[in-house]
Length: 344
Image (cartoon, rainbow, N blue to C red; front, side):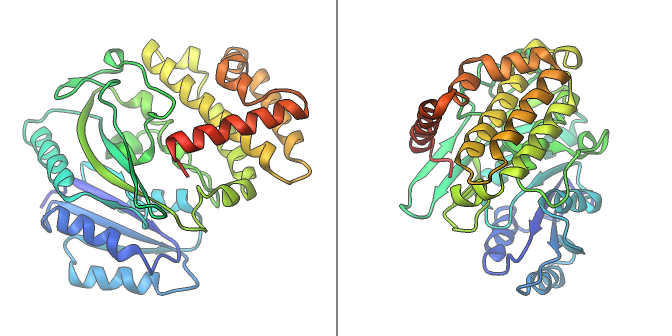
């Protein structure tokens, strides 16, 4: 049977929680034959991740595919899943996250309709929910004020996105050929490459659809999680690499024709640079501020207009205040945003 949707699940020492992720897709889809789940073991060395993936494949050989690769990091595992994917559409679900069953049924019904009617939709967007394990609270991110509902639309029809409302990997379901046509420049052995995944393919997407359901459940609470503040601060060099890769992907004013898409991408890139700035200041690495200065200088040389937007707009100014007192204000503003949005 032709696969409608392939899920890619990157796994690294995920044995203790990957079952929940896989079962949420199987149960949510009703064990549908037109769904594929590609579980990628990214060279796990501390547990039986690969054996578990193979066990799932043995039980559901027409749906689950277990793949092993030498450790290459999250981005390499996403690309490996994409390499083995057979679906018309492709969605990534991290191994500690899960999907909501009724929302998945709604997504599958929509995708099946597009394929049956030979209607091309390049990107389907849905909501995601931060699931905070420490207090049991949920924080849903939806796009009802930014995107048209119940219609196929183009970038020229989108509205304004707030700073807490950007399209993250969790909200995206691409047509697979969009990802294959031009590739996705994921960096090996690097965290936070989901920003690249949610940025570089966008100009290739000509038609979009917003499905207003809370599909993706984003687990927040593990101490070793990549978005944990201490972990992220210790990996600030990963954000330097991701920021450079996003910078080099486009001269946005020249390469992106849609003014609204260009504005959205400038805003997203600015947020990534702001995160990079804040966590460089939080870092205890002696070279952190020198590396941050180098990154800003590279951006200024690469594209002065992108630099002015990212560095001298409101967000860039607030996250790069000069002097030691300014640095304290910047970190204080980050703390306020953290409490309001609860993103880590």
